[in-house]
Picture 1: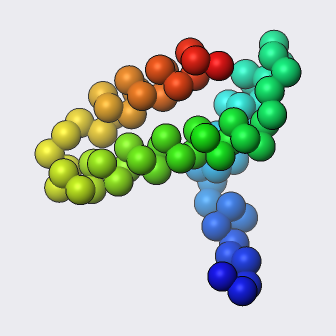
Picture 2 (picture 1 turned 180 degrees about the vertical axis):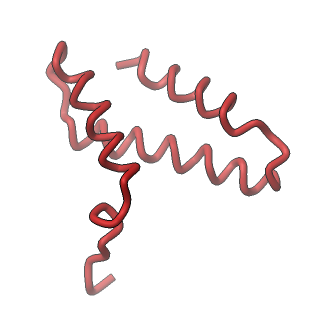
Picture 3 (picture 1 turned 120 degrees about the vertical axis):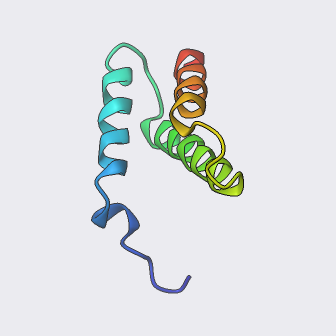
Length: 74
């Protein structure tokens, strides 16, 4: 893209992810930008999986499992 979008400015969810990353980083020395990108990618992956399965999977169960697995790996 030649012109940067406003994806992160208009949406609330990325801000919530940043807050979560900030809480995690209080006890650890994490690269918060990298953790944010990874966390948001996991979330997007869950949403895409749900979409590609036409809503036939439980997005909350899948998302909770994968996000806990990711967060515990930090």
